[in-house]
Image 1 (cartoon, rainbow, N blue to C red):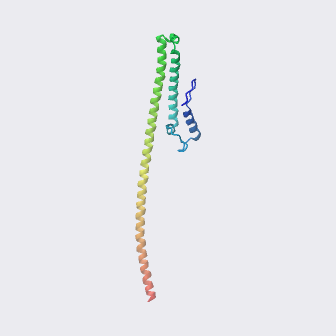
Image 2: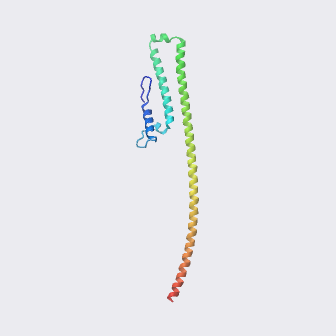
Image 3: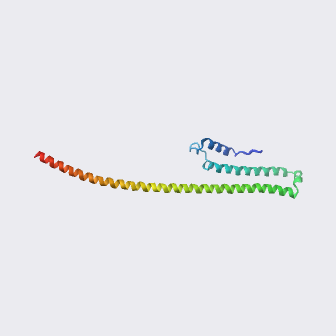
Length: 173
């Protein structure tokens, strides 16, 4: 993870993942994939997590900036009033609440995606079972028809060979 101070904070791993997904529009191959759980998540979930991360980093920067100004006794004098401290805490709390809300929403979206994936998996397994059952029925029907034709063929060939044998016997006599 890359942290840059300033107005824009970057996460190079997330940026690289987003760039790769935009270019290829497919999941990476097993040979090209690094061990990273972000590859298994849908792009919108990764983007949502990136927003949460950026909010967390912004809160961290706000706290760091606040700590820098609180570091000396002289810098404490303008902030020494209860009103200033309360305002600072309220802003930090607001950012914290937004992060918590974003995390709850992200978790909820991930649970919904998992639920949808489970439904798709169950539908696939149900359809696969239906196809297997249909294949077995078709196989049993084909086997039964084939066995019936084998009996008919053997019986016909037996009658035909008997007739040929009788004709051959008459010709020879």
